[in-house]
Amino acid sequence: MEIFLNGVKTPTQASTLSELIAEQSIATAGLAVAIGLRVIRRDEWDATPVADQAEITLIRATQGG
Figure 1: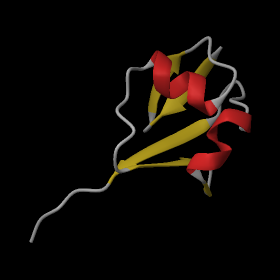
Figure 2 (figure 1 turned 90 degrees about the horizontal axis):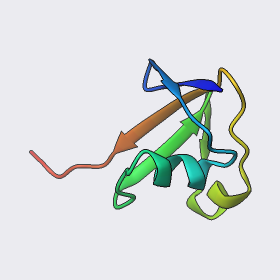
Figure 3 (figure 1 turned 135 degrees about the vertical axis):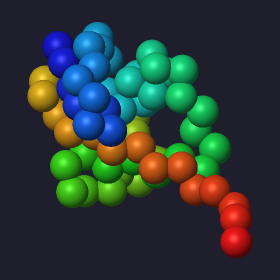
Figure 4 (figure 1 turned 90 degrees about the vertical axis):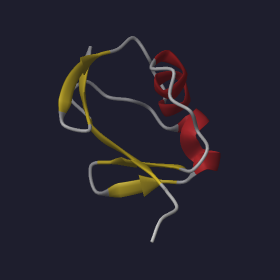
């Protein structure tokens, strides 16, 4: 299946958001995830399915001034 990860078409075999994050080797510290326009809470990642053609946005909190 293919998804759009931060706007880039990306092949994946992941069935949940947690699996996708692990598959892509994404560090979870400071990470926020949205599918479509809905932000997914971290405690929901294991139970959140990843659908074909899903638009997933990853946002990393950073410190700065």
